[in-house]
Length: 461
Length: 35
Image (cartoon, rainbow over all chains, first blue to last red):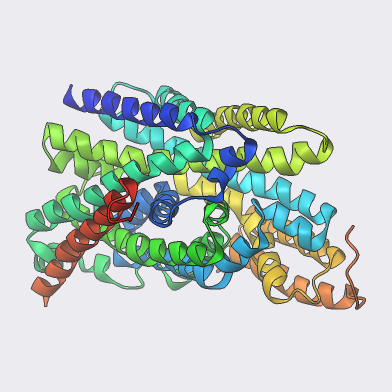
């Protein structure tokens, strides 16, 4: 009963923040990037909250619980991606003064390339949205065990939609502060202390755990490299961070906030998730699905009231990411697809379409969440073709601008999508479909852009 | 060595959490800024 009450209380707080923040939203621009005035620390928490979703919180703990300390490779890869994003791109993105990745591509490679990438980007973010909705449903089922997955997903999506639709990015950044505060206390303070105390510290873990869990390459080197590359590179060109970088006051703050959130929150946070997963092997050896190790640890290791509070914290983290990716999907679709078809659309109509498409994508996300195979699978399978095309193009635009041209870019995108999907369907050996597609796309981009480069000013298609 | 690891994980988590929450409260309520 206490858990349900805390869940209801949490949802009420989220809604109130959304409605209060809604009063600040007057234009489509403030809806999308909070009028580019997000203060430094608010932006740090907002970035961290976007990164700490289902992938970091439940994914890392789940990998370590299932495969031992080698599972932390996901954390290392993801954190490295976030750091490189700050070092290599944050300042340049903010200086470019654009809101979405397709907008950046349009300015550099023309409308045709941007339209193709818009469609691919929407699929990629949509996969993440569906994965977050599935996580929200899974966590709510710990609060209310009698709920089935479809009902749990629908209820949590409705709550997420309420404040995202009403408050937009302003509401998301305001709620992020609450989410990240609870999550930091839960994953970095309470649960590691409780878990390590119960297993007798690291000495207890090393003494009692099966030695296979302590093998640094237990998952297999190729799987580890694939995981690190996928989560590292897709994090480096993360659309959610892109929106937050654009919301920073200036380029210097954008870079600083990205690095601070990666090094001070993201990396230590995932290390704590790994410790929880490792301790979970000893504390809850029989678990139906490794995905639910963190919620199960909270549920079984804490009392009714404190457990309910900490579960609300986990719910808060995934809620923040879900609302954020839903926002990015809606903004990308409105600005890069609808507004391109109807350029004369005024600000009021743009805002309306952003809100309506937000609802539409969430409904579709619920369906994929219910019928998809699992959280990480949805993200990786849907995101791989877009990631394989986007990473080389993104690097090329900022660091090989001279020879980048629309024809070479279109050939690169086609090769990326075809090679990734072929490797996935044919179940190619050794490397993952993302890594194979990435290698093919990078080589293609270098060759194609060199061959099609005509010198002088590039004419956009 | 294991004791040091325990201390780093538990103490480090608390220290980072305290620093972040301090900054969050400071910025949210505009503390320490000249009006």
